[in-house]
Image 1 (tube, rainbow, N blue to C red):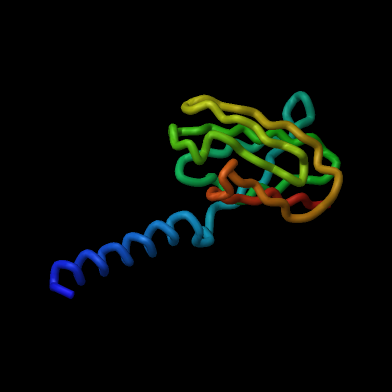
Image 2: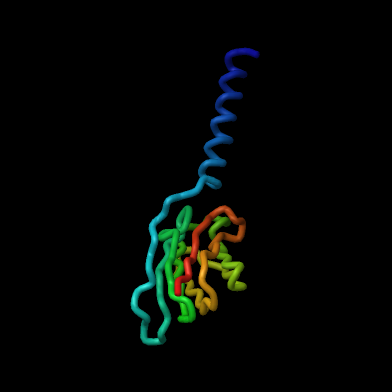
Length: 128
């Protein structure tokens, strides 16, 4: 192989590793604890959607309504949908708009929150 071919090969390998790391590596994101319930009794948490979820982990209480307000700050096709499979939720998120997702968790545990392509990851931790 020529020097140019080696450079292209090494550059390709670096690009593949970088893309896989960006989309698949675990992230140590912030955690938000749902604050006091609003007038309707829902525990509310705002989540910024831009290359991931911020905060990445949300802690709520079991048996009380939860309102997750997703603030999508991008047009990436990956972030156009949020999925909370354990709660039967699959919600489209408009770019540069707030979208509220409301549900009442009936069991404790750690539940996945992903994009429609399963590339963005977060968690909802339901506590007693």
